[in-house]
Image (tube, rainbow, N blue to C red; front, side, top):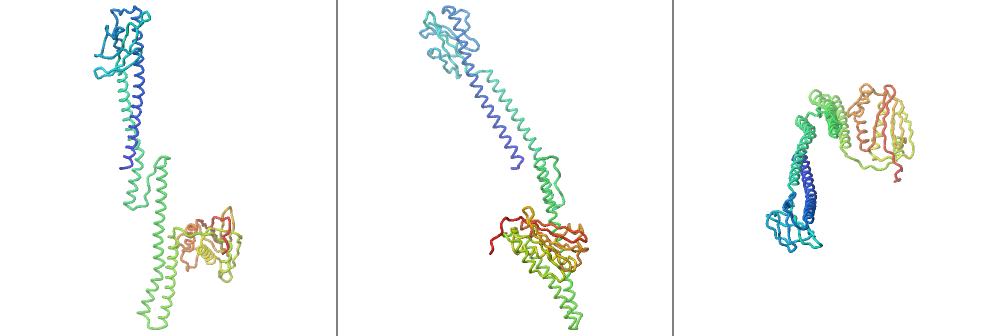
Amino acid sequence: MKFKKKIILINSCIISALTALIVVAAALAGTRAVSGNIRNSLIDTVSSRAAVISSAQGIVPDDFDYNVNGVYLSVYRSDGTLKNGSFPGPVDLPIRKGVVSTVTVGGERYYVYDFAVSLDGRDDIYLRGMVSSSNSVWMIAAVSFAVFAGVLAAAGILLNIFSVRKAVKPIDRMRKEVQEITETKDIRRRLSEISSDSDLACLADDYNIMLDSLEGLFRNHERFASDVAHELRTPLTVILSESEYAIEDTQDVAEKNESLKVIYRQSKRLKAITDSLLEFTRVANRLSVRLSPLDASSLTAEFLEDYAFPQGVTCHTDIEEGIAVSAEVTLYERILQNLVDNAVKYGKPGGNVYVSLKKAEQKAVLAVRDDGVGMSREAVAHAFDRFYRAETTRNDRSGLGLGLSFVKEIVRLFGASVSIQSERGEGTCVTVTFDLLETLPDAP
């Protein structure tokens, strides 16, 4: 059953149940109240008419009315024999002084009340009153109320149907638009705006944000596939052409050897590309890594001590002791490797590399900076894109453009963040921010 029909059915059942409950409760309360009023009216009528007989010294006037306000009156002698009266039907019921009892006559229930008319201290005459336990006025009122309640319930159900349809209409539109997006596979489309501050409008906005992310992912994958094809095509083209040249066009051994050297170099480059892609894919596809507390201060210092900086390049360190972060040793070292490699590769020849690790507001901040020519704003915006290399600032084509992308994926697995700042002529600084642990791990 569709959501709309289910909501309408549930609400209609609730409205009907509440209406029925109200009608039943009102009927019970009304019946009890009417019953009490009929009994009281019976007693009052019999008592007042008995006063007429009592004032006439036990003589029933000729004009005595035996039917008053729907009450049937009858006069009995003290021995229980009937003198005169009005009856709804044959009644065989002994005198019960001062007690309201019930009797059924002709299938209808009646209240009976016997009142003793005392003369000279003796109960010589009894006046009996009989009245139907049902009240036509009350019955009409009860039926009218039930009809009115039914009309209100029907109006409530119709209003419920209208309101639910109106409320669900944006959902139906959203569902239709989602189906169209799914069928056409056009992720550039977005859901229409919902002109309200409801949760449904927020849901539509969130869905559009998700579509934005998906479109970005698809575009990145398309660019990634194109970049991979481009990176692989160059060495493969060189290998193919050199192989054809060595096989068909040369007889000289030296030329064949030179072609083999070219093929070997391009094969090494091809292997480096595939190895980097495999490693990048493995890291990017890992949902999580086993993190453990690391002494980042010691690990960073040891890495820099072992790093083979080119001749003329000076490394300046500012490492605060006792900094612990939650990470994985190998991947943490890969972050350092990629960042320092970039600082050396794209810094000035014989320049400086600055590495710092400090505490800042419950965070551990690792920063690697060079004094190279820096990057443009456009290059900074795409610095973490796979295979991106800024041609205007990076003259070394030996890289694959995966270093910072690799760093970003590792940082994501660590639950940390990474940012880059760069200005033309002022160098580049990459900053990785970790959550700071309170205590260092135990020494192995």
